[in-house]
Image 1 (tube, helix red, strand yellow):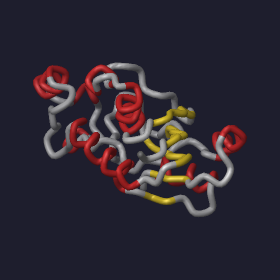
Image 2 (cartoon, rainbow, N blue to C red; image 1 turned 45 degrees about the vertical axis):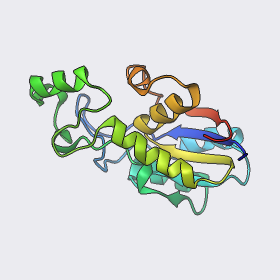
Image 3 (cartoon, rainbow, N blue to C red; image 1 turned 90 degrees about the vertical axis):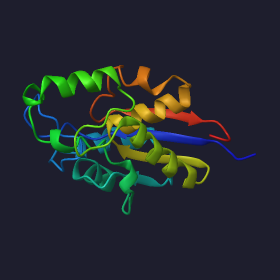
Image 4 (cartoon, helix red, strand yellow; image 1 turned 60 degrees about the vertical axis):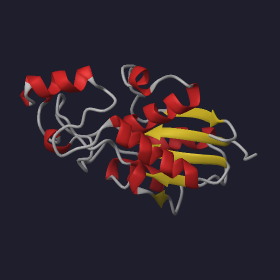
Length: 177
């Protein structure tokens, strides 16, 4: 039987983008990561590896937590495809309605579904050695991992509020997960 994973999930700092804009995979700048890193250091296990999404809003914070964070593409936010960089109000109503009707499997044009995001997160976890890991990532990844750790359906977790910017969520995935 395999050992458990203790994950210290950190959401990136607040992005510097206008409110109401869909930004999933856009590589936008974020607020200064230094104060967040300083506040979190005492809460994190010494010597644990730090993993990061390749997007700068995560990568820069990870670099303040560890001199050599490990960057993994699978930790990127969901790809909203053609919606990226557009105001939510400018996305056709019928596309938003289709998404709301099928939160798990709807794929925005040119993007990916939450089910596909979940598959890549599961692939990342399958390669993660047991033990403590610090992961600097996005709300979609944190929600996916919350679903897995809690046993709640992903569709339900997707409707819950997102983790706050710069926040830390600790979770344990039991052996075999």
